[in-house]
Image (cartoon, rainbow, N blue to C red; front, top):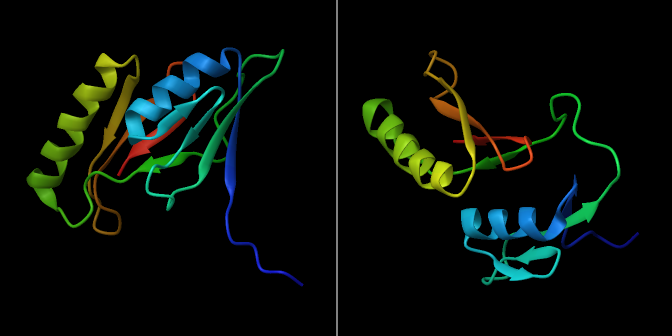
Length: 121
């Protein structure tokens, strides 16, 4: 059996081009129509496909945008809040800050421009 070398993450959405542009801005990806490609070739390709139905419930899978790696406490929260401000300017919505609890470090729950949940981690 051949080993899988790459993956693509596919988003169902109402406006593929708009959502693709948003995520390319978030991640620094190259915008290619209804897709986003990591210019370094390391990250997965993101594909955005139009579907007729709207989002109804919480995502079962979500992306974690890793902006606080290696940071803890107030320094981590400051990095999350700074990135949150940048993403809100792009159209994202801040949902809530989940503070460190002794097991998990702080993260910030957000929604993209079509309401899909993701975390700043």
